[in-house]
Amino acid sequence: MFFQTSEEGVEDREGEDIAADALWRSREMFVQQGNFDINHFSWLGNPYGTGARPEYVIGRPLDVRRDKARIYVKGEIFNSRDSGAALQGLRSDGPELPSPGTTWADWFWHSLTELEPAMRWFPSVFGKILPGGTTTKTIKGRKVRFITNLEWYSVGFAQRAQHPTLPYVDVTPLDHFAKAVLDVPRAYQQGVMVLDYSTFAKALSVGVPTTDSAKMTGPQAVAPESLEGKPFEELMPRVIKRILNRRVLPKRPEIVKAFRTLGCDPATAAAYAERLLQMAAERLGGGRRKLPHTGT
Image (cartoon, rainbow, N blue to C red):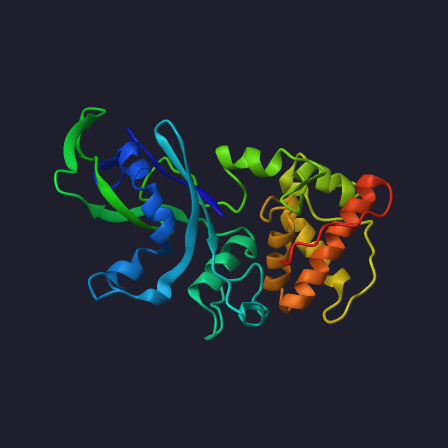
C-alpha cells in the first residue's frame, strides 16, 4: 500500500502545516515502531478521549521517502488467517459490513481491493509535538501553526481528507516507489517475478486496451484447468482484472493475497498465484519457464 502523507507549505483543515524535515527526521522511529490505524482510534479511542483501542490498528509502515516538500510512505496491511472466509460472502459492489470474525484490517483491505468503486481513504499524521516544536508561518495571507519537531507515531486513515491536497491511498506505487517496482518488465527481482502492467496485460488478455483502466475487464482467451479447491478459472479473471486495474501489483506475494481475499486457503492461494505467473512466463517467453520459488 502506498500514499503521500504530507506536503509542506499547504495548510490542513486544522490550520496546521507540518515541516517535511520534521517527519523525515522521525522516519526511523515511525518505520520501526509506528502503525497504521482507522481515524486515530487506536491512540485516542472511539469516541475520541475514551482510551486506546488496539483493534483499530490495521497495518505498519515499511519505508518512507521524500521529494522536497512531500513525504511518501510504503506499508502493509495485516491479514488475519480467516479473513478470506469471513469476507467471502460480501458483494464487491455492496455496503455490507464484514462478519463478526473479520478485523478492521480485513475490512480496510477489502474496501480498497474488492468494492466497486474502491473506497477512498485519506491519510492523517499522528505523533507527539516535542517542546519548542511549533512556530507560526503565513500561508496565502493566513497565520498557521507550523510544526517543526515531533515524534511520528502513526498514520490514521479516514474517509474525510484532513489535508486538502493529498491523494487517497492506493495499492499501486507512487512516485519514488514506482520505479523500483514497475520499471522491471519481464525481470526477476530478489527471487520474485516482476512485470509491469502493460506487459502483464499483453501476456494474459486479448482485446483489452491496456491504456484505459476503466475498460480492463480481464482476459477472454485464458482457459486453464482447475486445481484443488475452488476452481482456478472462476477466480483467475477476478484477480487479473484487479492487476490490470492497478489494484494489485503483478508480483507473487500480492497475487497470493488477492486469491486469499477471494476465500482461498494459504496453500491454494500460493498454488494459484504460481499458476498465474507461470502462465505469464509462458506467454512472454514463448515457452514454458520455471519461476523461482519464494516461499510466499
